[in-house]
Length: 152
Image (cartoon, rainbow, N blue to C red; front, side, top):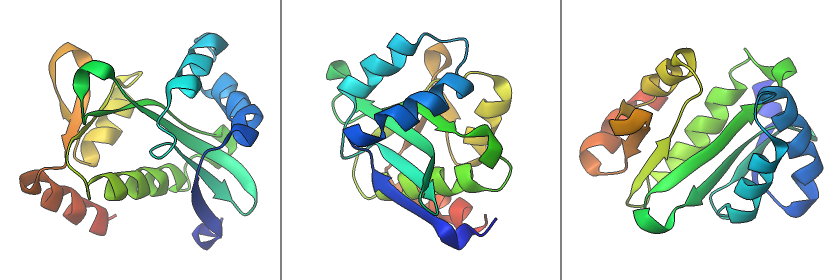
């Protein structure tokens, strides 16, 4: 598949049905209501979709939690299973992190399993307390992360 056919955009309400379909397949063990809560509390300026040609194939829903100030949480990151293994998830994560690293703060997430956690580690996330993984935008780490992107 041609990676040049990818585009990234902020998510809008019109994409919700497509998001729900991807979510249902990617997180079949989780209730649909969890997505609805994350969708309603998402940060519209920090939540992105990835399109292959004109088809939405994945998304990142991100939010700020009241207690965490400038810390952004990736609530859900999903890619349609038929597009996995082509580097599209990597492209979306790289795009997302590159934009965020221009600001101050950190990104937190809670991976579903160790395989996914290892994938995030590859892009600069580090395990913190309570099972969360975090990446900071501080200059000491952002140069390492940017170098990681350049090599992928």
